[in-house]
Amino acid sequence: MPVNASPSFQLQPSANRQIAQTNYIGSAAFDWTNQYLPDIYEKEFERYGNRSISGFMRMVGAEMPCASDLIRWAEQGRLHVKYTNVAVTFTGGQASLIVPAQNTITGYPTATNAQPLAAAVNIGLREGQTIMCQQENGAAVFHAVINSTMTYAAANATTTFTAAAYESSGLTNGNYTVWVYGSEFKKGTSGMPESLQPFDQFFTNNPIILKDRYTVTGSDMTQVGWVEVTGENGVSGYLWYMKAEHDSRLRFEDYLEASMLEAIPAAGSLANGAAVSNYKGTEGVFFAVQNRGNIFSGGFPTSLVDFDAIVQRLDKQGAIEENALFVNRAASFAMDDFLAAQNSYGTGGTSYGLFDNNEQMALNLGFRGFRRGYDFYKTDWKYLNDPTMRGQGTASGTVGGAINGMLVPAGTTSVYDEVMGQNAKRPFLHVRYRQTESEDRKFKTWVVGSAGGASNSDSDTMSVHYLSERCVCTLGANNFFIFQS
Image 1: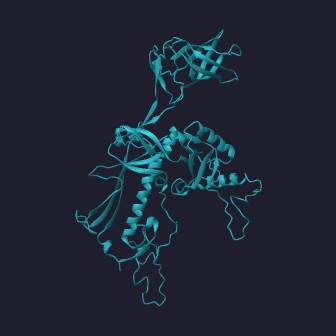
Image 2: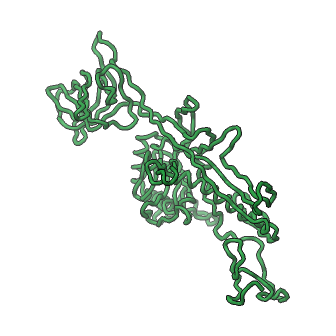
Image 3: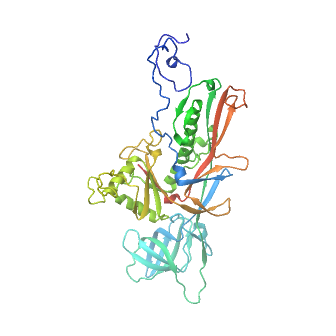
């Protein structure tokens, strides 16, 4: 008898297929002639429902192949010119304006050619242009026309020019915000002395390689022990050893999506050092939005005042008409509550949405969307609710580092694809995977061993390998919002 008398018999399956004292059922421990045989459920109980967290990228993005180690694209800059913190000093009706170094808002066009040293500091103001100047810490406003060339002071990296004010009174020294609204030239004068170069921002990302595997021995494959598996992702039926392979595949698919959300570049980090083989990392969606997008740092919006601030920020960005809100459960409830509070008859939350007082109709206490300047469509995001992933938040949404939701613009944007050499329409979020005519690395799988139909190794096992090489491109991250503590 291979099983010791102590400890006594326990029906406790092990996590792995292994022989142990606690999971062996023999004649000494169980009398098969006993009339009281246990009822055995064939079907596996779905204790945690659909355990997969994938689906976000399929909903909001697209997938397309690439053949390179590096993805590079250009995004348009601003069309008009504006500078902040410009020091203005008046002498009569003549204003001296000093533009400090690197104070232009990212993405504004820059001037080139005629002005001495102007190209070195990328100043986009030109002689003959008319400017609007608004004091930053006061009510003073004046209009002027630039009537001198730019001079650059290398010592303090500032650019100075003069302008003639159109106003004759109320001219106050101070720091101003300056933007161009047109131009004016005298009769018989030459044309505009400089041209403006459009400002493009270039962004890059690189794919990473993800791998996983599942292994079963040839001996275990001969056992007859059938279990009806769940119907996750359309897979159901009676399987035994392939049940574990099915779970491995589901887990790998979840990792593919989670990596596109959570990954960060490794440049300059410990992971990028020679001692650890120079890992590259990649730019995930969260990293891109936190560094190039908009952040709501109060946990999540809980009032129309919060959304008004969000809308005002979106006005200054791409002003995308339709936006999707992917949020966790706490944020979803908070939005439902403040939307219901807008109904004067809805005190206490009893009159949500379209409610016709029909006793046969269930009361819907939630909202799918609303319009406040733009259209917002709300969706619960399972990834942010799953306790094995980002679902560690609380009802207040203030757990340190917690991400409670994300606003994603709908539709596509136009970018310059440097590989294609032309402008192309791309979804704001899309996945690029490595592919050539002979190699497809979108989701690659192969079998190694001498069991289960494989015959390419002397190992008495069957190993199923999974591999993907991909990255996500977050275009126009300035149109995204992330809700975090």
